[in-house]
Length: 95
Length: 190
Image (cartoon, rainbow over all chains, first blue to last red):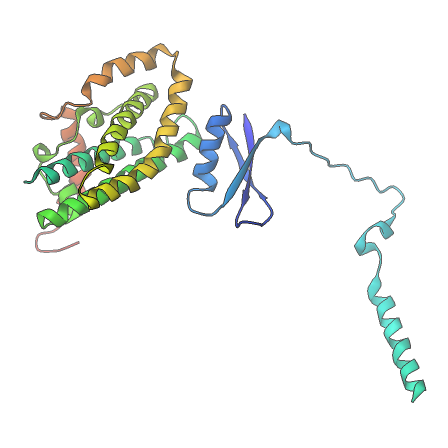
């Protein structure tokens, strides 16, 4: 059975995928995870889950190319530049 | 030699020789994860041996290395249980289970000792041994109904307390273990 191991490096930090291990059951998985990802003080906590318990999602459909849904699809830089120019022109006109 | 030094050497010899035997599985354990786990246990045992030899060495006016590698085979006090070369996994696990059981009883006694140095070292070792015991237990649970494992337990159990003399396998192991030290050119130091 394959188990996925997640580790937390320091208290309060997010858990990150550390790797996977093969073990016959949960008891073995815990022991091996501790050995491989915790023995050198590199983790404050581990999460161990059987691979089947994870639900992968890999399809992210974007048929109509609605890039405005994404942060990178909305170019703010140009607009910001224009706004700054307008503001400085307005300020110069005031004087 | 004081009773204390004798006791320290007996435990250190057990840990060194068992560590050496367990390390023979490095690279060939039944599967990769177990290889890592069992090699780490072997390394821990040798680490415990080192700490125990150091304590004995202070008392005997020598060094841990000299105690570990410069004695004659007949001067070692390890039990026959740890001496055997066991190339069958179920027998190695049977030894592991029996040793951890006996070692736990021994460590409990040492932790209660009036000798503060000894008691604190025993406590330190015991904290690591707790994981060895967990490892031994999970394998014992898994192999409980395996006839070869049951036979091995029965066969090896009487060897725990045999400390009079050595098995022929120990002499072979001693040759390997001390080979590097013995190859040192005369008049040089490590």
